[in-house]
Image 1: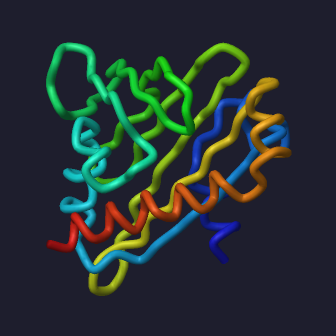
Image 2: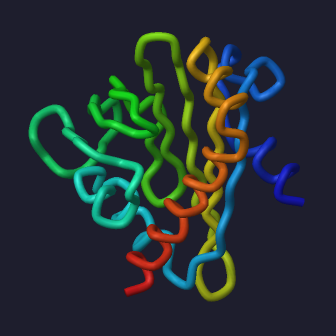
Length: 160
């Protein structure tokens, strides 16, 4: 069910389609908060390090704390400094970005789906590049574990 739902919902750029990418991860969580509450927490990128220990040095171009359509931001995750740009931005529903660094390109998409008593949040990422393939071999399952922690932190913060 989750696989069919996300396949139909995420708007993958051709190059980053899961069937063309050597790295693809999927994570999901049900949150006892409204899509609006989840959205407000998710787009406040400057505060990701407060509830997601794998994010640091988040700086949104222009100095504000929040992401917006087309926003550019830099940050560090998995030990990599990334240059990132929001490519999809539909309030309360979806956001996606393209992140690049030497030897890696990643496309990270989020869906917020209304549900009884709150919402479902799905996040998927695909990656290309030598660093992506090496990381997958050296640290299998690491990205799935960290993304689940991100979702759990997001859910906790949105539910308060």
